[in-house]
Image (cartoon, rainbow, N blue to C red; front, top):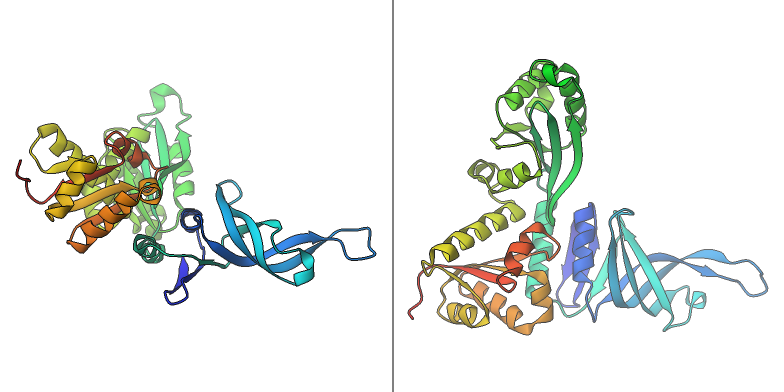
Length: 342
């Protein structure tokens, strides 16, 4: 993502470069947002029977934003407050802007500090290598990508060799996997049970040394989707991806769950406990659903206080797999530095 933040005028200009960047725009366009971008609109010139599609620069008082994954775009709908050329549509008419990868969009509103933090983090994340996770055994291979909004599974391959040959005849299967690995950019985490991953990497080193340099081996108990979640939470992955947002959030959720199950007093959830913890400067890590921050001013104040008092704040997308565990505790949880007095 490329972004410019003009705090004085309250305008953030964004050029999305990936689907994750479009997801951020979708999250940032909220009630009260004015969105300016290039667009097109149907127009029938005076005296003509035919409609033409005219290029316009338009600013909307946005009503809603929708993320369209299959078309890789964000659709932003609202009333026109400014349009050039002026004769194309009256002010107050509804219009929809389609924002795709590479399209510049300008958003003006009363920005929350956590939203500006989200943009800054997205810009940093866009400079990091793309991380893919591929798990293999002699039966199958599962391909996934670690995105800012969660884990995306995008391919599963099956070893089509006869069952009795699968332990020894992996040539065609390995060739198919290597062909897919060669299409991936950036760092590749290769894992799975047994020695299949080591044998595959040995073959890659002999055929494509450049690809082999981008591969890191990790352990996993299986080559299925559950194995991917296992890898994301593993210590090996932690060492490889120390600063990856989703990985860190998942690890912190696991820390919270262990603490809560032990009842050791180093975890908190629920409005009353969280408010008490932040007032005592006891919060080490606050993990909160983005929807809560938008819908309830209590959580926005909680987030700001936690940051002011040295706590780390992780805002988790409501659509992510990590969100399901947090929802069970009301949507916001905290890991504490020390026990609070009863």
